[in-house]
Amino acid sequence: MDAEADHSLEALGLAVAPRDHPLLYPGAWPARSGLLEGDRFLPLDLLVHEDRVPVVAVGSNACPGQLRRKMDESGIASPIPMVRVRVTGIDVGVSAHVSRLGYVSASPVEAPGAARELFVTWLDAAQLAVIDASEGVPLRYGNFRRAWLQEPEVRIELEDGTPLPGAYIYVNRRGVLRNGSGAPRGHPGQRALITELLVGSARLRELFGVTPEEFCTRARADAELCERGTRVFAEEKLVTVSGLERYVADR
Image (cartoon, rainbow, N blue to C red; front, side):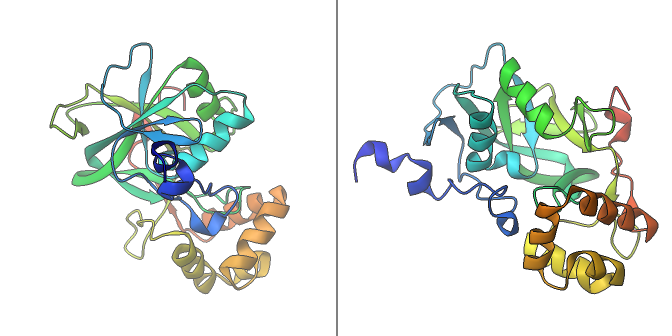
């Protein structure tokens, strides 16, 4: 295998986009920092990102295959630095909406003292506009709003321990799903999550079937069905706040 093939998304197991295979959400994340350039994930030697903004990814935006698909659909070929970071004060919860792409996505939740290994993508203006659009940010009733997080509430550290002054993150405007105690539930992976949701709700089974495969197929075929499923979350009191709403400038 030549050096070019060594860095291909396919060779690295990073090529599959969850929007094509929803049960694989959030998709494969890289093992280390790198530069997403076309269909390759290259070593990242420098952390100088002028005219770019840092955005923390908690779900499929940390999957190179998903990012590449989003950029390809908008005709953007510029590279994206993806930097592995340690984030304290944030955990990964479950968005309180059913995505038209066939999955129930991840969403950040406030978690004082908790630490997670996540990724920061450094986006230029055109790339940021694509990600904003994919998260529904420009729309009044879109699912997510972009928020700026910074110390002391949230600490974001590079692999060498250097702290970032802050970063953007996408907060779900509908809230997040809760666990039995009322606190935000963690995201266990798509197949396990959908299985748990269907077992716990007769109304969701009526809408989406009894298996994760049925759920994904029906959701991808019907935007109105996704909206009905989202309403079931709220009506069955499965939703709580993420704790990050106060950081959203335009709520």
